[in-house]
Image (cartoon, rainbow, N blue to C red):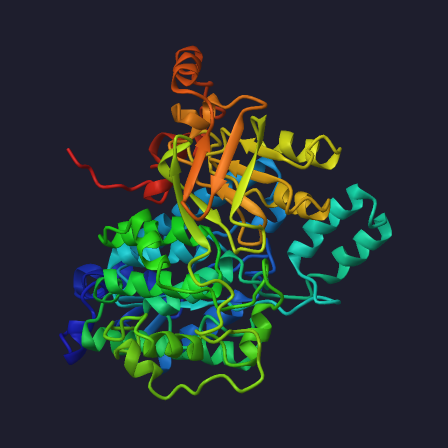
Length: 564
């Protein structure tokens, strides 16, 4: 096959399909629909996270087809392939949740593996659930080929303004005697009305918004309903955009810069987003070679207010933010206030400032997004805490409505299940600081989310009276006085392993401290007596993950570069 003017855009596909010695490969591709003309086109891999496992992803097969058509119509050859997804909402509170964070690494690995093996010149990745999104971005960053991410979109509210967190909290309300089994079942049957990711500013919508601010999605992609003409148009445009990125040779490393990650952090704070954004943004930055740390969240958080009244701590859902214009007017407000780096390049081939130039402000009268001079909280809700319980840092989500300081006594649990049972049976009482340990990246393994216990706490009416700290993490739907990502984790001998029932603990989200009020001599005595528990898994993916995963403070990644 002869060279063509498009060969500069076929850097990776040409070695796979050009020349007589690649005849066998072309024969295989003819069987899946390639024509002679297709072999001369740039190949665009369409990474689909479609699955019937979860409503977040159940519609993405259709979106992948639309993205493929967009690439084809722009002069490329789209090729759809799949990667996995799991459902946090289904797995939460079970042993299966240990696979959730692991799935982020599997998704990144699989996208890298397929695209590198098949010689795709560019990529569109479509994700619809928490770990899909950072996993897709990490895979694209590793490959560093022209790429666009598409968010699958948000779900619509259920009856009575309900969502998945409403169901979790109904379980706690039932345990307290406030809801009957019939009432719980009614919420269960109506809270999830169809396809789309969980409806508040939980992790899925948080990460979608962060990725758009990062510049890796087309404008508007993060704030669209899953089932909508806007989302289908977004997919078609993404397929076409990759061809333009190929023409300009714009790669993820050109877009995912330190300044772009600062934009993502700033928007997450303004939206009141999930603590998981800390973990995922650090992991994504690490993958592309940007040295993002916990300190960056503290530094930026001092100058960025929380402006969005969105669930779980607020009132509104993502679909209601979509209806007033999504996140673009908010981003323009932040840009005009000097809080965003407008010079950052995006997947449009233009800068963030260029993309926002024609965006109109929110209409008068809306109260979902506050003005800068009347914030919900003047500084970040994401607090990075240090102290003798977290010498390498911990992540708290303190919106202010739960207070900024909590002092109580420890009630210690060795797993999420133990804590959940004691919350529901009334053992946990006001003044308790629940310590859930051995749930970190290595100790769990897998760093489970604590949505079930935090929802049970809220459902039992203890949200202002109980704190929960853990070396695990939290769902974007968790709220209350919660501190996660405590490092070093208990399995590695971190101070969390030394806490005993009745120990006094103070959490101060103004001073950003978390302290175990036990003297150093006693802690040293406990340390000498402590023994690391045996690994919970010795074979399979969880064992492999536990052997290779880094600390939560470095993103809990499995591909840290060798520093020797």
